[in-house]
Image: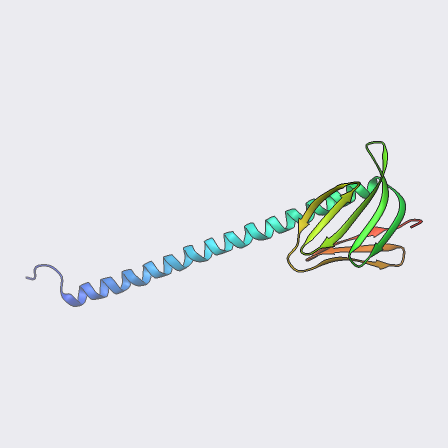
Length: 138
C-alpha cells in the first residue's frame, strides 16, 4: 500500500490546474476589455446624442438667415426673447457653439466633423453620426 501521491501525479495535477487558471484569467480579461469597450462606445453615443439635441434645440428657435461652410453653420434665433446669431463650428477636435460673446464646447470628436450643403439642406456629421438640417429661405 502506497502513502501519498507520486511525483507524476503531482506534476499532472499542477499542469491541469495551471491550464484551468490560465483559461479563467483569459475569460475574465476578455470580459473586462469588452466592458471598457462598451463604456467607451456608450460615452461616444451619449456625447453625439447630446450634441444633436443641443443643435436641434437651437434650430427649433431659428428664424432664418442661414449660412454655412465646410466647418461651420450659423443662423439667427430667438433665445430668451432676444434675437441672437448662433454659430456652430469645428475647431481642432471640438465642435464649438458661439452665441453672442459666449463660446461653449459642445463635444469633442475622434475621427472627423463638418458640414456640407445639399439641395435645400445642410448635412452635419460627427464621427459616425449625422443629421440633416433643412434650410428654408437661407
